[in-house]
Image 1 (cartoon, rainbow, N blue to C red):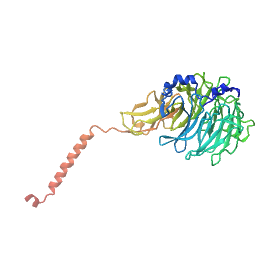
Image 2 (cartoon, rainbow, N blue to C red):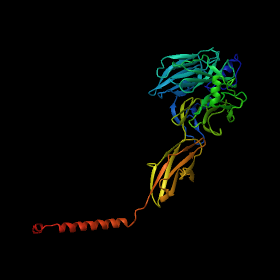
Image 3 (cartoon, one colour):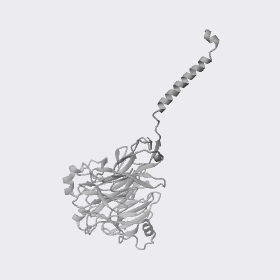
Length: 462
């Protein structure tokens, strides 16, 4: 869990205990019954339980991730300042204990990179540096030390880029300011650079980082000494230059402010990007409920999506949803999804009748807006309707073959609905049934005459 407090003097025993706590003890005791309900929704976000954990005064779920097979792995610690670290793999809905120790606090982050699960401890009453471990996700029987203190770096948490690169935030010295670290991983999951290479000097207390789909790197401190926590952003070219040594001193925070956490939040425990480049942060501050904040990719506008009386922790993206952990489990927030609500996207209408196009939007954050468009002959969007999840129009012959769709927006991003293709048919004339019936009668009579004419004299005698 995030060590979200000012850096204490190493000899300050009481400060060490506070720094390494999972939750404020006062908050935890007052909120134990409320915590059992999990995070509450803000701005119409839909928060659903995914994996419930039996939180108690001795055990709280902290961090989590899935391996390549979809199996869930998570860590457990003691929320009441006790030394405790447990790692579990969920196998057919049964938690299997992978690792445990009663001589260290639980670490901040468990992460899957490729075939391996990486996790750290949080030190102890005397050791301020964090040990890191890993194990093969499919064969968790053997847990291997990755970095054991002292090793010239204390990693707060690691993040993967692809299946064979490890990125981390941490400190080069005990209680030192935050730095960014990097190392390729070999086929066995071990670091190729030990300790990992420093490619950024950021300051403040180490916190979470995330890559967006374009490779841009985002970072936010676990605690900002000034009280104002900034989200920093570096583009993919700047990151690659820092990794190769082409940027001199590596990544620096100056000139890379992207957004600021709203008051009273002065740090964060989790960060993730969705496929559209929007950034999600679990913001924290001593004495205040934790919030899940969504930042728009295009303008960094922030929208709170969930609030938790304790501390929200790790964030993950999976199956068009944001997943968050807290003391009593893992919860799911579905992102905006748009589907057509008709039997087919091919719509058939008769001239003069009403053609209807309808969609169903679920999930997302904030108010939804609907914008219906028609594609003209030049394949240009023409706005034809707003504010409803359906659009109706009177079909005309010239509308046949045109395409209609809806652009649905919430407070975070917009998504385009499936496209509807309209086919318009001419009406059947009202006299047509009478004509067809008369024709059938005439044909029947004519047939009878032909049969009569073809009867032979022998048949008449018979």
